[in-house]
Amino acid sequence: METERIVELFEEHGIKPTANRIVIARTLAAEEFPMSLADLEHAVYPIDKSNIFRTLATFKAHHMVHVLEDGSSTRYELCLSHDDEDDEDMHVHFFCERCHRTFCLYDTPIPEVDLPEGYHMETINYMVKGLCPECIRKEGLGKMRT
Image 1 (cartoon, rainbow, N blue to C red):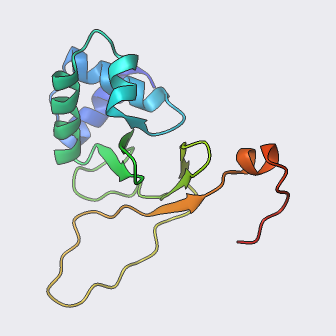
Image 2: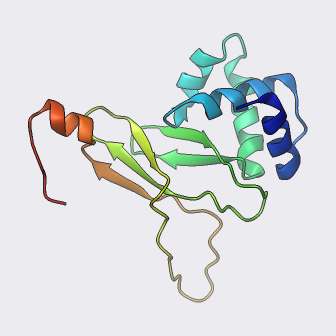
């Protein structure tokens, strides 16, 4: 993703663009899979862990990252929504229990959740777990039932 587009995202989400924030956002945008804090720390070295964590907290507060819990770690992906309030970029994620990768299923929207009266949803994390096609193929499991 070009720096100009990243700066536009910052403006849309009300975040001041700094050099470190741009590097972290560019790294998240370039990855095929959501990244853990350790993945980011390795990818954006020499930016220190505390700076990365503060940046991710800022991104989260402004709805510029999706925060995913896969059961073993927290992962982050750049949110491509054009608004810091309404996230039109929400989608289902799939965690492969064999290779431990998390996949974005962009064409699978998160189902509508009807909460009881009095509850207000701020965010939702919809994670499906199982085996990815590559792991199924590697293990010769053929077509599995869904």
